[in-house]
Length: 139
Image 1 (cartoon, rainbow, N blue to C red):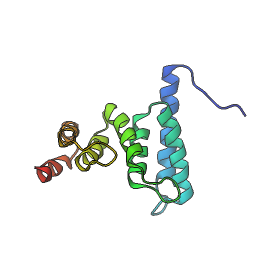
Image 2 (image 1 turned 120 degrees about the horizontal axis):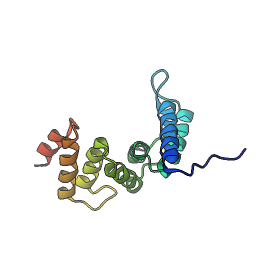
Image 3 (image 1 turned 45 degrees about the vertical axis):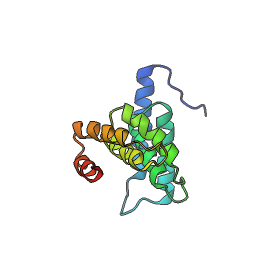
Image 4 (image 1 turned 45 degrees about the horizontal axis):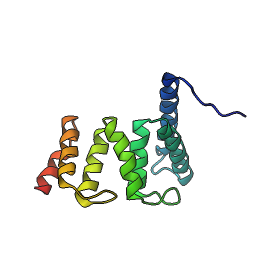
């Protein structure tokens, strides 16, 4: 069987969205916590969607690398930051929030309180609800 490789930009965007949707479905818990094999499938589909630039898939991969998922992916702050950056560039407020914490602590990135605050301000402008508390705690 030949693998599908979209050529046009619109086709690539739709294909990436489909892959990310399958990843999200795989990661969702059927009854409680998702099974290990479901998380592995989610990781695979998110990885494929991220190759096509899907910002939501990059955010989800950032979360997976940030936290680590047993027997799926080891915690890797540098990879998490890279995926969060792509999602930040795509306007994902949750990625801005999470990457802000990474800059605050210097996890996977060079520590920068200015960058952390800037990311949190951007996330707040997009309506992220937890940002105010983070900025208050920082200062």
